[in-house]
Amino acid sequence: MIDSLSCGARPRVEPGLSVQLNLALECKEGLHKEFGEFMRSWVKHIQESPTKGTKVFAFAWANGRRCLGTMVFDSEVSLQRFKDGPYADMMRSVAPYLSGKESTIDDYGRVLKSRSRKEIEDGLNYVRIWSYTCKEGKENEMREYWTKQFGDLQFADIDWMMYSFMNPTPRTWCFAMAYRNGPLCERASIDERKSVESGPLSHLVTGEAAYDFFWSVEGVAYPH
Image 1 (tube, rainbow, N blue to C red):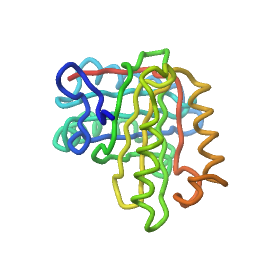
Image 2: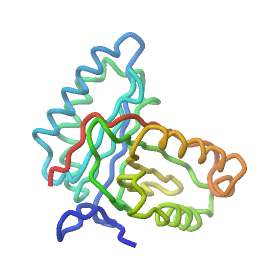
Image 3: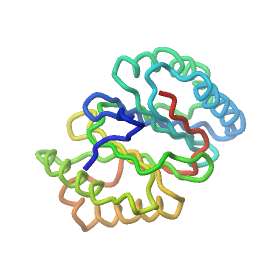
Image 4: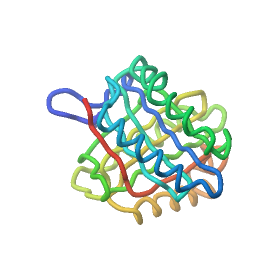
């Protein structure tokens, strides 16, 4: 199995070195128009002027009030450069719109596994980000479970574009995946919920996903 997104001779995402960021922001009721305009402008800006070391990113709007995205950087240094620059500037500007810290997702860590079948297409594919807390003592089993789940994906299967996942803190597991369309995202989410209730995941995780957002990609780039 190839555990990286490839780009020519050099892996675009390198597990163990590359760093993944899952983020989601939700605005207050009644501010979705201003929030959406600002965030779309910001995504366009980082598309046109990406932070050095940015490997790939994809953003979407899960509803009128929530912007979600996943990004991968070549190193922790590059991630910190982004967070100290464009990200910090964006958060200062968007702060008056946000509904609160409890609705803000900012998870990051070194990539454990990543693979790509095809580059994500803006406006056509869907991106999903989600996270679970695993039960105490189940870290190894959790890694084995997801390694097999993603490892079973075949290049002949046109339903997926890429995936990447990380274990940023003990027992916290965060995922990002791009699918061909929305129904595939929804079906994957539903199947996982069933597994959490009475399937294999019920033995591994503490409960339902900490977050599980997806929508049509509206802003994607492969800068470096």
